[in-house]
Amino acid sequence: MGSASPSVSFQRDILPLFRPEGISCMAGYGVPLDNYTFMSQPANAQNVYAYLTGAAQPQMPLGGPYWSAAQLALFNTWMTEAPPYQP
Image (cartoon, rainbow, N blue to C red; front, side):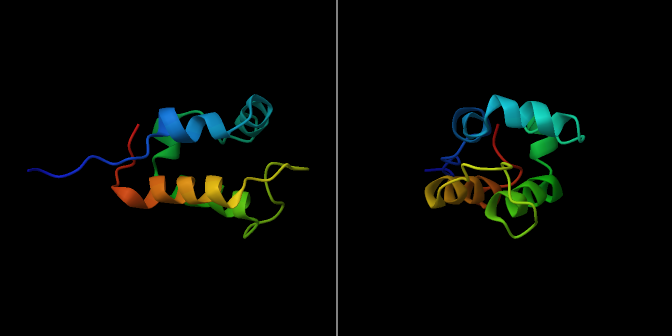
């Protein structure tokens, strides 16, 4: 039967969650949210997730609206489903 492929894709599911102004802003800090190679590194994805959840401050995106529980869960699923994370 073979192994099932991951159900969450960076391009299809995660990238659209980031607003263009957030992508532009964070690129100036060396955090290319729209770059799969960068985001697929576990430490980078976990760091971004910490800011999205508010575990690291300031919570992102600055001034909100903050991600919903469902959006955070989707990102977390992408991170934990089947590294290396799926494009």
